[in-house]
Amino acid sequence: MSDPAITTPAPRGLDVADTARRLKAIFIGSVGNLVEWYDFYAYTAFALYFAPKFFPSHDPVVQQLNAATLFAAGFIVRPIGGWLFGHLADRYGRRLSLTVSVLMMCFGSLIIAATPTYETIGFAAPVLLALARIIEGLSLGGEYGASATYLSEIADPEHRGFYSSFQYVTLIGGQLTAILVLLLLQNVFLTHEQLVDWGWRIPFVIGALLAITAMFMRRHMHETEAFTAANAVKKRESSLRGLLKYPREVAIVVGLTAGGTAAFYTFTTYMQTFVKQTVGLSDIVTTYVIAGSLIFASLLQPLYGALSDRIGRKPLLIFFGVAGTLLTVPILTTLAQTKSPFVAFLLISGAWLFVAGYTSINAVVKAELFPTSIRATGVAVPYALTISIFGGTAPAIALFFKQQGHEQWFYYYLSGVIFVSLLVYATMRDTKHASAMHRHE
Image 1 (tube, rainbow, N blue to C red):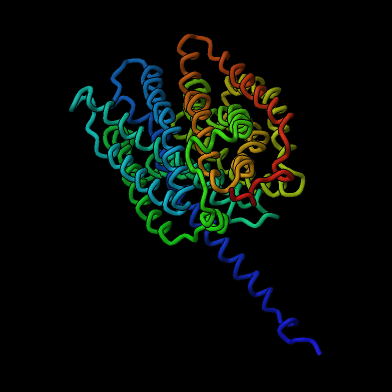
Image 2 (image 1 turned 180 degrees about the vertical axis):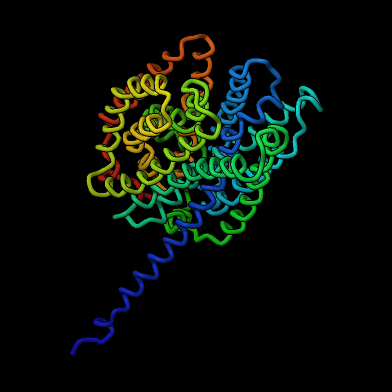
């Protein structure tokens, strides 16, 4: 007679409980990620309103260029944040690193909310704004690596692409939330004059409060089993020295990130300025167009992530590389010539059809390259270094070309950077089939 314990449905119950635990952890990790990116992107969403307060000039392009330069400054320090929080995540746990990073973002938002204008304190105003962006850049430099690592490790292997895609759902969602706050302030609560005068401070206060909430949520996150297993290994290196043992993997992260991050920040961060100043749409219509395209982009992420679980990561990366190389110039050229909000929405959404081939899976691809003991550092540092060169600078480069009267040069620059990444996609192994996720050395 068989043992009754063998025929009971207990294992299925355990599977359900385990799935529920994973989903809860992914939800908490994703919500914190959304809050961090909301805080960071509120700067861009409201730059049109606060730039004159910090950068006096009669030329709005110069004002936006100065604001974009500080936006890029927040990226310059991201490699430092990637190393600092990556080391923290690999040595003391993903949960601690994610909790501290969101607390730092809260501090940066509060500085922006409280900083007096140039008219009040002179040159100290943009200096304090730069300090806040540096703090936020350090925080975000650590958030990406720890978040990508946590979501990839907490997911079950069969659905890792799907679950990790929610990092970019919430990343885009952070910018979308900033845009929606802008819409509410523009249309419901404040006049244009009030927004320019003091209303632009409101989103940063909201961001600080949300960050505090996310911090308390993250304090109760489950630590990943992969980190717990790696923590039991006595001889571990969680530093830049340890990272040097993986030069090939580091080079792959740099190569696969360059084109993707340049495209991402073009069709998110820079698009609001591009649609308003080049296409010539009004502030409110611009906000609607960008918000609609971001909603569309968010919906694509889990679809592409799930697809990668079936066909692999490499086909999606190659799709992005080929389509991005061939279609970037035509899309941006046509977008610059249109005056229709609907056509602008369709063109930006069309770009997202291929950009999502990168954004949906880039986090899991990087996580699958490194063993557990060095994973957060391996994901964060080369990514942050690359994004500081190609991502954060994209709006500033585009505005520089525009100021020089050659805006179309940026279109070819972006296409060229994507092509360089395509060469990496074509020669790298598919990390779904050659994953280091179960290596704990």
